[in-house]
Amino acid sequence: MEMMSKVGTIDKLMSFLPGNMLGGMGAMSKGQKEAMQGNLDRYRTIMDSMTAWEKNEPAKIKADRIRRVARGAGVREKDVRELIAQWNRSRKMMKGMGGNRKLNKQMRKMMKDGDMDIDPSSFGM
Image (cartoon, rainbow, N blue to C red; front, side, top):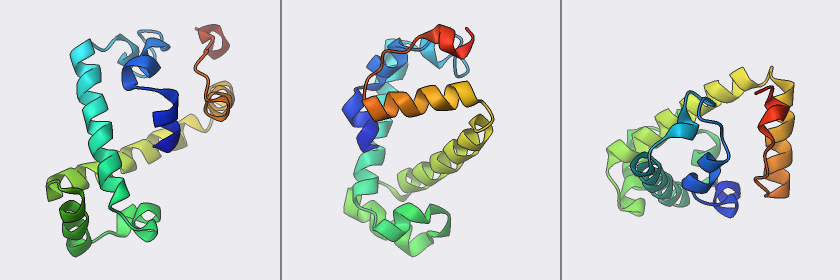
């Protein structure tokens, strides 16, 4: 999350993606991007209320810890559960991307540099 906030807003990140990349996320409307940015801000607040163990083992978080995190972040328990579900989906997606070496290498370089100058041709597009 810290890396993403250094890179910029969702609107800035998505502006670098071709319209058909990542299931059409590059072609999202401004309203959709603002909603996604709001979700990310809320998720960051939730994560700030989590202990290191909870961040490292989100699949093991039980109802009492979800309640504590929600109270600490000032959000609903449902929001904490959404974050955990999103983490699970992201984890699955990242496992699937592991086989695409070009994309993996470009993403690592992009995150390391903190620079979003992406050449779509390097992804074969």
